[in-house]
Length: 75
Image 1 (cartoon, rainbow, N blue to C red):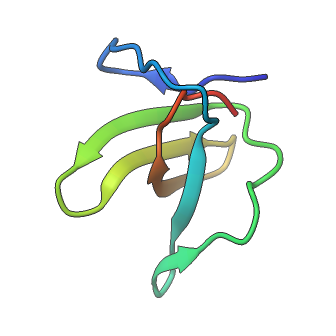
Image 2 (cartoon, rainbow, N blue to C red):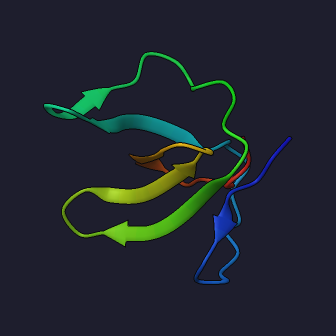
């Protein structure tokens, strides 16, 4: 099981796994039907007042921005 990288250094005490609900697509926020496979590096960016918990996944050729619920941070 993997865990998000936290740039703020805080620890979240929760048993539920990380939930990604939307990703930033070409036409705005798009709903996620299932957890994306192949995410090897996921960074927790913090909590946005407007959008909620924000995340970024890094691949060798692109970055994807997600929003969802941090919960335990494990995925």
